[in-house]
Image (cartoon, protein in one colour):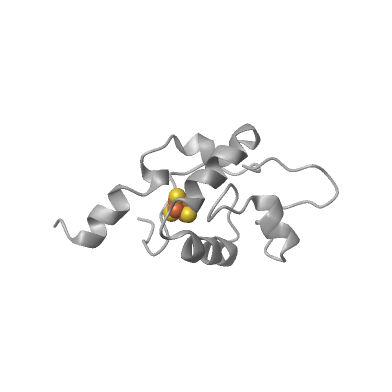
Length: 100
Ligand code: SF4
């Protein structure tokens, strides 16, 4: 089915960009700028906080989420953290859409 919502998801910046951009410290600036051009960034940010995600979501990095009290699972304050952590990287799921 090709609903208008489905079409909106198809054009989200993270659906048309290499997922590595959102999980690499070297490309944080690009990831943030892509998120800030996204219509779902606010919802995406709050859902990433709830899910304790790694990487950049809703223009917020894992370190910024941790500082706001939503540290990703496995986060360690006693050593520098990479955007991706040690968890397996998965394809990003846009805000409001279930993984599956
Ligand atoms: S990660 Fe979230 S805010 Fe960033 S482009 Fe994807 S859906 Fe939008």
